[in-house]
Length: 450
Image 1 (cartoon, one colour):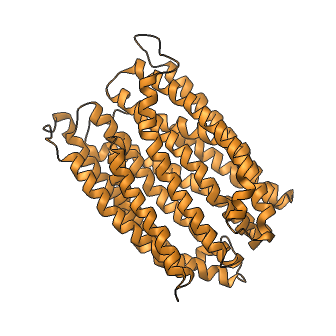
Image 2: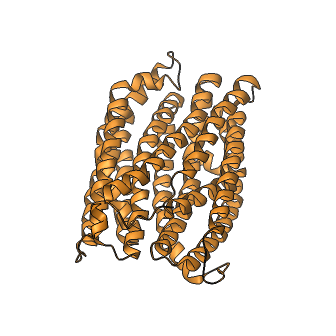
Image 3: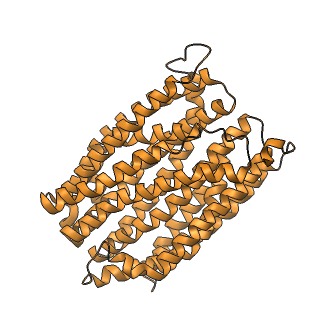
């Protein structure tokens, strides 16, 4: 466990965030493997089916992210304040709350999966495979949630290494199982889904077991409570806005997916491939923001407000470097990258992916700053301001997508809505963030310069 309230901020952040970033790399390999295997070993329709279902799974991931952030921030606050009894009570509360949320989502998901796919204008030729993939994904939802909450708690304790190790093992296993189930056993899209199910289960069990063993070593003055009303309130204070942020973005993406589906299967396939790579980049920068959230929460709890501004600056620099790397790779090599998912004969789908990447990727440097500023707002529990920025981005992206796609731009109009929304959201997030760190700052301590 790493105390984020002492030491040079740039060294502390870099050491802490690097494993988080590498975790994203392997998490995206985990996700991308499904689409690569579907597109290469089954066909364009299978890739479209997996990509079509993916937008619905992002809504479920939004709830997992909310639980992750709620558990993470409430744990980091108590850890930073060295209140270990309350920290354990908060962790117990977070786990029970996550269990309840997961069971409710599974029930709603199984009941609404087919109507949702039809609402998305899913073409009839991919409806069956989309539904099969979604049902198996829902069956493994408990694994997904407990893995996310366990790793969120580890991150709050300053331990970003062990979750990375679990994810590496799970991601590598997922690639091999995808190929085994699809190429060898000929299970089609169901094989892709079952590979994910099994690997998520293994990574969840490993992370949760390691967390329990770690917490046993933390000594407390009194017995932690199984459920704390105060911790539950704090969990909801961060968890609900974080869930809403991701949910509304996902709902917006579902609306966009429905719009994209009207352009036909090649457009769906091209977008499905390109958006996987886009999510790789965005999630990588988002993870930097998550790291800054825990850094901010620990330092505010320890009354080290002076370190928050430094965290914003260095976190933004790290995110900008990541964004620049992905921009250069995607912008200049996108046609070659698309061939990981598609065959050379899928020219229309490749062209769609090329358009998406050349329009969106130059603006990664914009979204990088926004995501880190959001991290400070979450860590400071300024969730109202955080939500205003998020809704502005969402409203602009969805509204402009429908407006511009009806012009001569066609599907390219959808892609142009992304950078416009990001630009407005960046301005709002930075203004709100600067208001948080403007208050009187304590002088830098000696140990911060060593």
